[in-house]
Length: 212
Image (cartoon, rainbow, N blue to C red; front, side):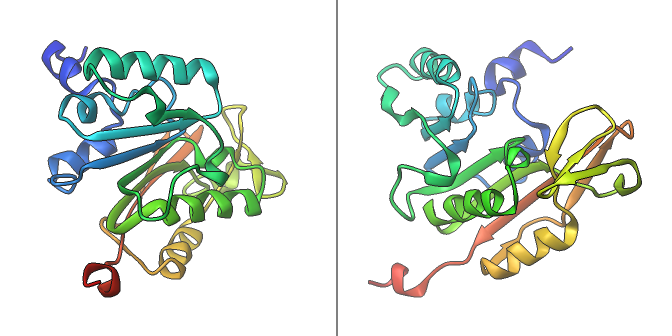
């Protein structure tokens, strides 16, 4: 059972996002966007520490929940920071955020075009020097136990359907976006039922933006 004090401070934060906090990589960041934020499980710490927190989710009920969480943890916070919307069409200007989180959401892509659109939107709103953190389903380590059902989507041993990436795809996206991996690509295989990969990449600084 999680320690009560830790739970109050961090909520049910993803352990790999927590790892980035422990490494100090998120120190000094001020604006956070959570893609597919749900009820805000990954936002408790950021709200309590005074980060400017935003979230987007296609489920209106989840947005109501995360707004309530933000109001409770950070009285006076702007509930319009949390909006119903789609990741492939974000309602934010370019270079708006220091940290963009995409935790267990990108694998719901309909196909390769939808996946790429979500990645490019996340990258567009990330400022130079900012960090993109993603955990997503992959075929790494379970390629012999999945069945392709079309459009890059696979049937997994746990009975779910997901759009899956592999290590080559992640490395190619990192290169094409001109990003820099902050950690090696790491994958956890969950009892041979599914494979979850962590992708942490930094957007390179733009000298033209740093020196207007």
